[in-house]
Image 1 (cartoon, helix red, strand yellow):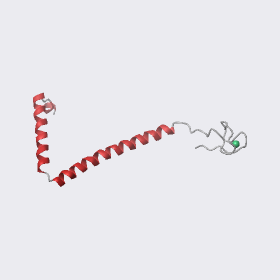
Image 2: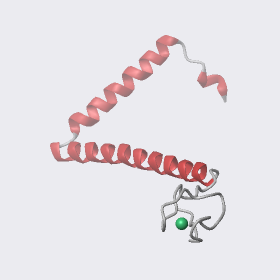
Image 3: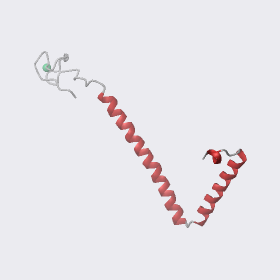
Image 4: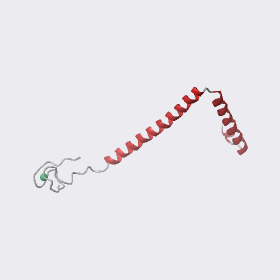
Length: 99
Ligand SMILES: [Zn+2]
């Protein structure tokens, strides 16, 4: 199976040139409309890639955020006093909600 994998640099160059020639011939045989469509599809594929990459980054950020303890507000929303570590303001007793 691996006998065909051992190309010489010259063979690789020939394969590359053949592929480029075939691609050029394909492009030449296309109408301007077809070429535009192909270009749009290529652009769409690039955008899809970027979108799925962004999704992965968002997911990773969500996972990372989940590992950070939710911080309580630094100040009481009711009286504005510096909030302690408890669930209620130590000055006025207002419940300190996680945000
Ligand atoms: Zn308070």
